[in-house]
Length: 415
Image 1 (spheres, rainbow, N blue to C red):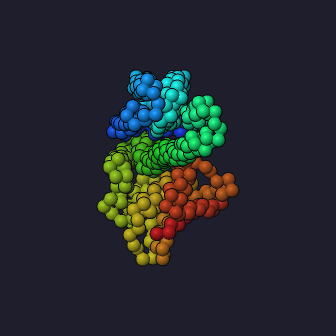
Image 2 (image 1 turned 180 degrees about the horizontal axis):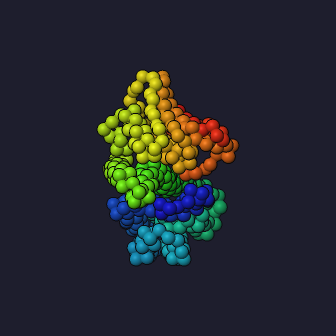
Image 3 (image 1 turned 30 degrees about the vertical axis):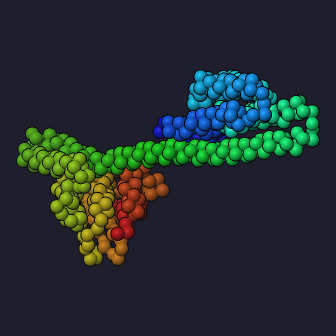
């Protein structure tokens, strides 16, 4: 089945599949070896009955025994030339019924002439169930089995002898054949249902794998988008601002313009390193060869130089190494928070405070800017990205602010 099959597929699929598989003929050969065994069995049965009729059963006239032998040969030829292909094909159409009708047409006169011909039922009953569905095959078996007592009754007219003689044998043949056939059909139906369930399970697992793969791709794209936003986009924004400042000061203060261009070049190089790290290992370049504390201090120093806003970084508690994923999140939150301070707050000072406690790392970014109403918290991409990042590592991000009182961004992560 296609890997794109719907998980909401109707349960009727299982029933229909089981019915289609159960409709296959009983004992349909699965391989050449098994089929050869069946053909050997059929051949032995026909030869044995023909030999019994000719050599052992001496009660009937020779002419009738020869005629019956001819009918047995006709049945064998009818099977070999016509029925064999039908049984191996496994489908059910008018040819299956024609095959069984031909066998009955040859068998009924044979058993009417020589009673011992009924032994050929050991071959005819399996053929019926192998070439037809259960109910039609059972009808054929009943007709063929009752032919012997019917012929005996027609020849002798003795009801009592028929009831006590051939009729019980026919009933035993019918009962045993039916029980065996029903048992095999039920077994095959259970096997077909299990096969359908296995097929459905394989399809469902493939669908789950596909959906998980797509969800992983979507999550990875979201994460990469956040990485690019926090690194390349912010770096380019800084470069643009520095170039604009340099352009504005180019004619009036060449030294200041040169300083802005120097900072722009340095920022561009640092973001190039970030981009390379993102492509290579998706780990911030600032954390590749330094601790989180060193990375935050370098970040605040560069921010002070680039933005002209006084920034300090303080560390409290016993410094320890955190999982890489946690350090990346804390660094990205600090980068985004400082970007928002520069763009929106109008602050003169900003502080980063990293606190290590037992099992927790807390990062506070506080500025003395204009602040805003937390109830009307902006839903810009930066805040959403920070919150998503923090929640991915099991942390919490809160914003405390009010108009004209500054803003504090707190990140708490259990680590």
